[in-house]
Image (cartoon, rainbow, N blue to C red; front, side, top):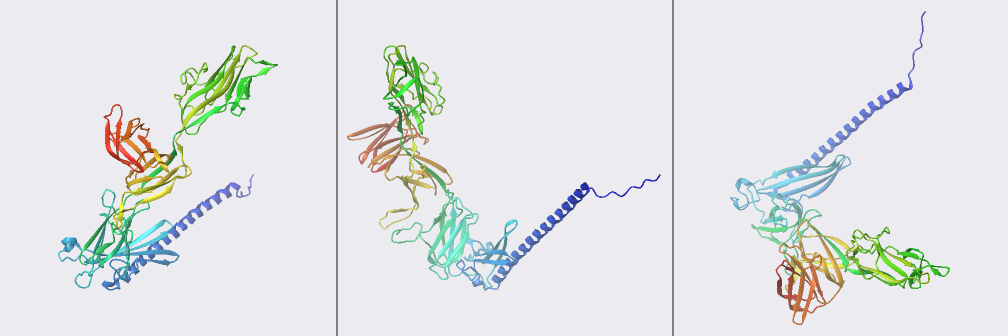
Length: 573
């Protein structure tokens, strides 16, 4: 018997698998196509950049030797230093830098056998453009020699040296040179080489070369300064180039330092107290009555209950530094008793190891809480426990208080001025003109961060005296460093002195005794945790003596200390 079967059609699984294969194949082909398009575009852009650079070089080759130079550059010429060309939707930025080159074949600089260092002109063309893979750059360079023998241009050589704060050569510094007193005017930007040098032979003789040296935004800058009615002795002034001579200017720049200034109010006392005019400062009470100036036991049917208690709301001073001494007023008629306990923020009595006697409660006051850790116990509560064996009488609590030392507390919106020691010249009377003067204000949180050039900065805080400081001014900032200054400020007095005491290694010394004295005056102050001692509202004089002493150190006395206005003074063991 013969069995005949009809042919089977495509199932859903066959369709899914087939579709997936088609998607995979076409995805691969599409990715390949995209990669090919990107590669083609990249190659096309690169070829266009090469063409732009070569066209610029061919233009320069068409010029006479004397014309080869940039407009506003050294040497001066007819070539624009920067330009932009757009091709096929891509923008190409063209930078042309032209300088004289001293061929070492006949010696360089002072060793040049014929004394002429302007042997050739060196041309560097840089083309910048953006691709899908990021920023790209094409560079083309060439030398151009005069048709005859090498000659000078009748000018001199301008050499700019860039160094860091330690005097070491600094490469890749941006050197901007401007001279509008000559024609054509010079407006040139160059970059220092690995020796920190920019050499520009062929500079036109002139006394008006303005130089500015910078680097990244995180660096300081340096420049020359004009002589004017205020700055009559600029340092450095504009540079002068003389024919056949080399003029060298050295400029120091380096990483900016950061100074974080924090301003605070002095330490103060914050006191929790209650005389029980109402129950607003009581968080809970049991079988007691709070009001009318006292806490007493409750009454039922005219008789006092046998026991009761009351607990304060949480005592949580902001910026808590130390707890003070508990005070309370208890009245204990015969047959009655009352005691006060100190509770933590969970309502648990402080253990005996933390506060001796707290387990039984206190009946004699004051009670010193200065040894209670503010870190472990930033919040406390007071609890009174009352009892009476006579239903006709009750103990009473008429007042209690718990002070705390708080601070320093951030002081917002404080104006201050920092003045660096570096000068850029002086007036006709010889008064210095300082390079850096910053007048600013702390934030609403009492802080301000300032990027500053490496230097030593004096501080002025109008309307306040600096009564304590970690660290005290002046601030000697090194390049790239981060520094913090915390200032405790109080009412300004006409004359004041803040003494900072340090050891031989420069570390501040707390709890040292500082005595300030002169004829008819003597005062002694202990240094703070920051190592400073403040003397305010004192007379102006030049003959104060400062004596510092501490166990384990040899006492030191200095005479002839001058005080006029607000003064900062450092003394070391």
